[in-house]
Structures are given as structure tokens and as C-alpha cells.
Image 1 (cartoon, one colour):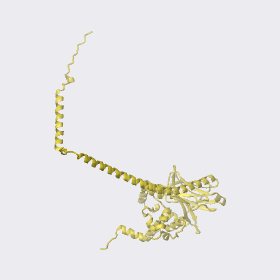
Image 2 (cartoon, rainbow, N blue to C red):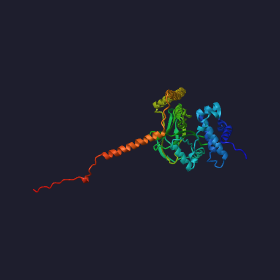
Image 3 (tube, rainbow, N blue to C red):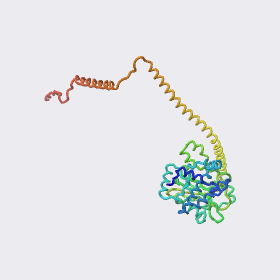
Length: 407
């Protein structure tokens, strides 16, 4: 009979046949984050299971594209891979993005359950929505500046909006924000317009809980504005709280687009709930009148970047002190055990200083003494009961009643 390889051998073989992530996505090693994202979305759309239901080669290619993107989209994992290849990348912690529209009802239910239990579930925009946008067959509604619009979008669907800005408005900057009053999950999307007229996804922001609402925003202010991706840190926090703290700001990365040119720009709100629709309010406005807020944002984000460098240095010091503390506590336990053992030996030596035979109490004598004591106790109890004077019962008491004299 042919010998079957073990599971570990098959995994090792798979590792040996892995292709370079840059080669898989068709990008160079000095590609920008935006170029990597664009390449991933283009290839993920091409090999998506929804479009290739009965093609196992396309399914394998989709997995390879997704795996390559999880490495190159993370700055730390990309740095590790560039330095030492796949061995430096923690493949066990790779997180895949789920397209909820391609999951069945049962799988969606399980994903919702895990999310409710605190397991971070990363989701991607439905391949159907991206394909319709790329083919230019989506309906785009105008969104006037300074005029909020409130609507409800179904799960795994998107509402598209066009915003027209002038040269003067581009100089002041543009802000687009979305809020959901029922704390629903959604994505705020920004699309580039292709030469063919189609729309290609360029940016996306996940909604986050802020007080009693969930919100997401894009800020095109003419200088680098940073976004914080906390999804990857959620999995780290479940494994190692210390590592989660020190890596909390790793997801603090600059937005790829800092300003918009004059013309028409397309945004979209994508419903990212598992089962229900999303109620939302979207608004876009010029940031020209927010000069103080822009300066405050620039200052605070500069302080966060400085703090990220300080935390990186502090982690080295913390790890060294923690290792010393662990070593000291281990030695403390060991020394305590040694001292207790020495004292025990000392007591045994003291006990050996005697000329008489060692005292040994037999178990039978001990049981006999307990039995005799019990019998003596029962005899004393009977004697005390016998000597105790009897009390008259209430129905034997002679009651003397005198007759009342007549008046």
C-alpha cells in the first residue's frame, strides 16, 4: 500500500511551494500600500468563489491572493517577510477577510456568534458590489456639501453618492462622515473613476463605536491624516495582553490619499451587519472653516507618532525587567523550598537525640482508648439521668380551688 504523508509533512510541502506575495499580486517590492490594495482587489474580484463556483484552481488562487495580501497589507508582517521570508511571518495569526454575501445562513450565524463572543471577524466588500461598480452599473445619488442624508441600506449592499467640489473647496479640504444611531456595522468607501467609466475601490474605513453611535470618516485636509486599524490588535490581545499594548499603535498608518482634486468624487456606504439593514446619516462638507481643528489634529497625531517610538523603546526595557522579575520569583520559590527542607532535616536530627526507644502508639490501643472513653461517657450520662429528681407533669399537679362565697 502507498504510504500517506503526515499532516505536518503536507504543510511543509505547501510552504515550499508558496510563491512570493509580490509575484502573486503582480506588484514590485517598492510598491505603495495603495498599489498593493488595488492589485489585491482586482485579483480577488477575478478569482472570487462567487464568479468561479465550480473551478477549484480559481479557489486555490483566491486563497493564495488573500494570503499574500494579509502579509503585504500589514506593515510589520511585510517588514518581517522582506527581511527573512515566510519563516519570519507568523502564519498562524493571519486573518482572512470574509465576504459575508458568499456565506450560507449557517456559516453567517457562526460568524455572528464568534463576533458576539469577542473574536475579531474581518469582512470584505461583496464581490458583487465591487463588480457592479467596476462595470459602471450602480446608481449614484448626488450629495450636496453641507446637506446630511439619512437612509437605510441592506446588509452586504451599498448606496453610492457623488460629491462635486470646486478648486476653492479643495484648498480648504473635504470631510465625509457617516454615523449609525443603532450602532450598526458599516464601511465608508471611496472610489476612483476608471477611464472606462467604472468605479474602482480605493479607500475604505470600518465603522467604530463612539459613545452611543458607530461612525466612520475620511479626511482630505492637504496633509497626511492617519487611520487606526485595531482589528489585528484584537486577536493579539486575546493571546498576549502585554503584546497588545505595545502593538496598539502599529495600526496607526497614514491614509493613502491626502487631498482631492476639483471635480466629482464617489463615496459609498456599505452595510456590514450579519443579518439586519443599517440606518445611517452621511454628510460631506468643506473643512475651510475648521482651521483650528485641523491644526489640533495635526498636533495630536504628531504626538501619537512620537509616543509610538517611545513605546517601542519602552517595550525593550519592560521585557528585560519582566524577565528579571520572572527569574527572581522563580528563585524565591526555589529558595523557600530549600529552606523548608533544611529545617525539616534539622528537626529530624533533633528528634534522633534520645537514649530510649522511639515512641510508637499502636492503632489498636488508640481505638481502645477511644472506645473506653465513649463507654465512660455513656455510663456517666445514665447515672446523671437516674439521680436527677423527677419533675411533676402538669397533668398530675393538684390544683386547689376554693369555693367563692356568695355575695
